[in-house]
Image (tube, rainbow, N blue to C red):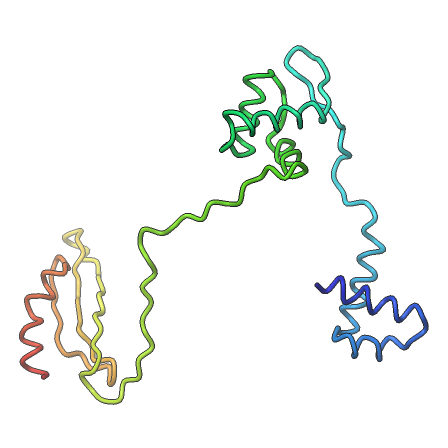
Length: 197
């Protein structure tokens, strides 16, 4: 988006308009404009090795990229319709004994627009974020705080489970023991309900 805006600004600046005025109208800072102009001039070569246009098979025969693209299209239309570029590379290696890198297969698939969209993994555990609640009085919302410490002589851990009132951060009740499970909460939860209606 910024490239298009800078290109429009550059067109008007080349026609003789003042940089500060054009940049203000277009909505880009001067530093952004000059950065894009300098970056575009410097970046003539995109880096990396030049594309060879061929690969080798295991017998030492040169195979052109056009032939590989043809094989990829045939594979996608055939049994390999649900393969990604990594599996397509393995398929090319097995069927045509082609020595090819997965990055090259990725580039060829991208040119042919054969790449599938990334699979979104659905989390089995949905995010349970705390709801924003406005607490105006005590005993409207409680929270549980679990802490643990190390017992040096016995080489064990102990747990402290506290029930806190969110409004004034007062500890309503707590449990100390060598284990901390949900069952412990059920032990002293009924007493809390009667003590704080």
